[in-house]
Image 1 (cartoon, rainbow, N blue to C red):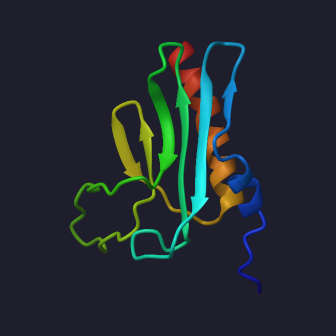
Image 2: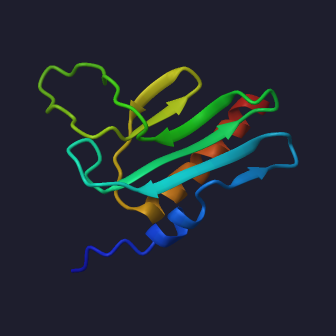
Image 3: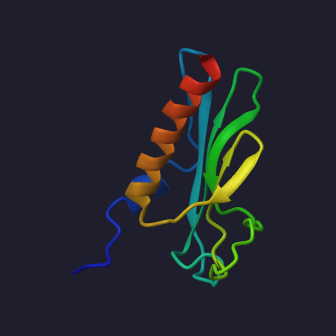
Length: 118
């Protein structure tokens, strides 16, 4: 079984792109290679964000900074920085590969827009 991440080139090619939507929302992509570390074991620093008409981030998936997940009684310590922002909540995000990240981001964008416009 191969560990090649075939979506990586697509993710990296989106670095610096913004996509305005007809409804006034817009998305922004940042993604670039970094050295593998404990915090970034996949070697990709990324920030994929959805902004509303007032330019406020309302959804995003990134690993730009660490965060403290809610304590679990018997949970293992999380060493990666991957997480999701939704409104004012931050939750862990399990990075599988670049293609899954893009799918999860667009799914989250669609769900968030539905929730805030309903």
